Image 1 (cartoon, rainbow, N blue to C red):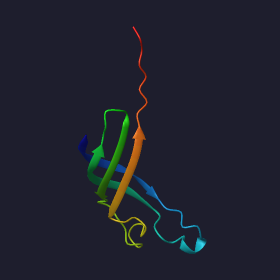
Image 2: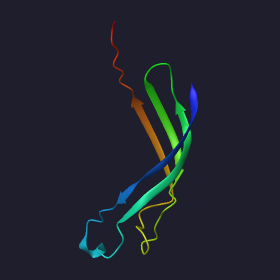
Image 3: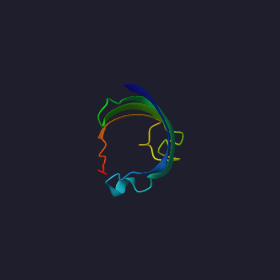
Image 4: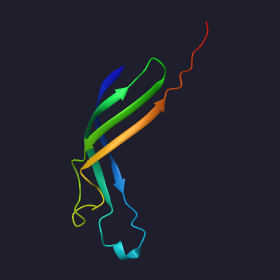
Length: 87
């Protein structure tokens, strides 16, 4: 079965540029993004997700990290572990 996926994400972004040459550049930012996609959810605990999102807070290298791009694509495969009990 294929189902739509809608998410609202919040978080924190931190970049490590790896050289003291870039110490003056912004390297952290808050994150906020809507995300839309599809989930293939068969009748067993496997889920395959594919989605695209848009970061509402981005940077240009002067006022925010230049490595935080507005559009992102995400894919994931997950297996749900369910504990069942016998009566």
